[in-house]
Length: 98
Image: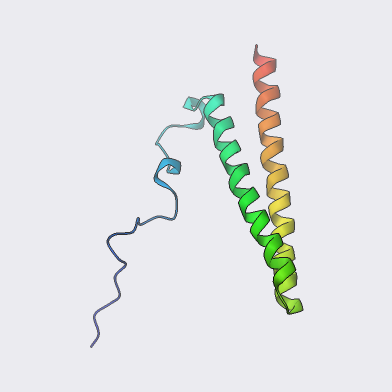
């Protein structure tokens, strides 16, 4: 009988980048500057996803895959809008506390 499959030991066990892993701090302990920087990084990564999804959308031949790529494009655009709204809400919330 074949032994069970084991993941390679030279890869991280999580898809989350080590610097993005939860620090154990509560949201209240996280500074607004840090949250803004995290949202900026998220927005950058969403931009990469968007660019690649748009590229796939235009290069794919069959309609079913083009529809899937279009769904990724629209979902990513919605996520970018949400990240921008979060940054704006943080900014206005921090301004109202001053």
